[in-house]
Image (cartoon, rainbow, N blue to C red):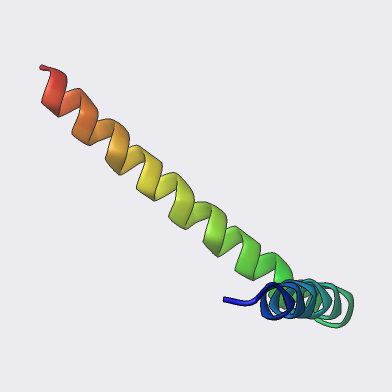
Length: 55
């Protein structure tokens, strides 16, 4: 992928994130909570898998 396209997508994502947080803070908070919960679930599953693997 050309560097220009990567920069454009990166800055576009940052601009969208700032807009989303500024104008829809409740929605942004819910989205971050959901992402955090999904990450915690994934890491707990990985930990359970490794624990089961080692015993």
